[in-house]
Image 1 (tube, one colour):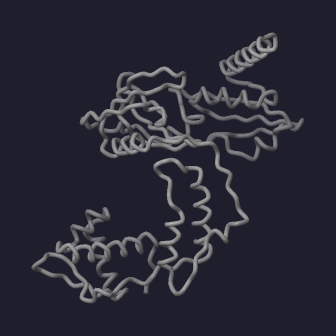
Image 2: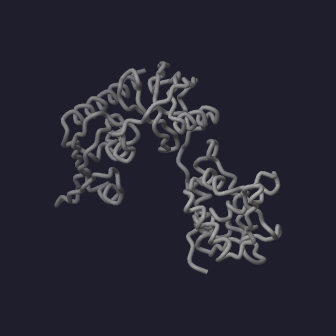
Image 3: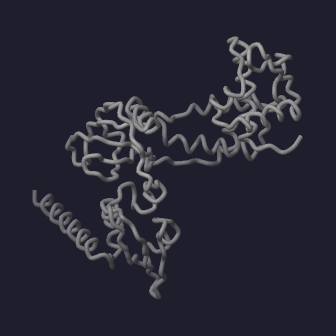
Length: 332
């Protein structure tokens, strides 16, 4: 048997399932069915059929009267999935990582998933993935519980390319109405965000799905701006929100935190300059702003803003506000 990739292997199993479903329903599956259900071309569908017959020995025949395929031996099935220990280990780690998304529409029943995998393994094997990763723990960050109906409606509008109207609670608590052309759904730090064109403002904007209070479908379709690139959008941002213009950031971190700053990637464009006294200068270009200010504040007093001046002034302003608030509280 020639080598076959796992995506192909899964597709072949799906083809056999479609043929069985067609035999049960009486509406036999054909090349059009495979193209529609699997999103493949006719030549690919024909190559898959040749592979199943010639390499796997599948007893597939074509019924001209029903215009579709059937199995001459209904008991025939593809060989079971073969997983090695490393692959099972990877699945079990994925299960731990997905714990951070519990309470969201993407929450998976990993137990049920592993049970299916175990049933498909070759031979008499008992699969208990938890025993492979008992020595590994993933501490999930805080996360936002989503309204499953809103999340699903948002994802479907993105898929249909349909304009939507939303009632949205902003970060400051104010509730406003927006008309939006939703482009992309993005998961970031335990929350989900829809990125799209704010029609009234005529610009790309970011909205937290968890703060969408109501949504209305418009029935109006749109075309995505061809200049929009999600990878560029993410790269230029700092955190989840970005502005219109890029600016260069230069931050000087003390030797006390230099090792921690040095070992992490804070921004895709970052570079680090080592100083003789053990401090380091972190440089990058971003169009982000609000989250950048909060992030710099979180590193006080071990960071100094070298550039831009606007960032230096904003951080200083926030620090003075904090001191004033603390002093006022102490007097009370």
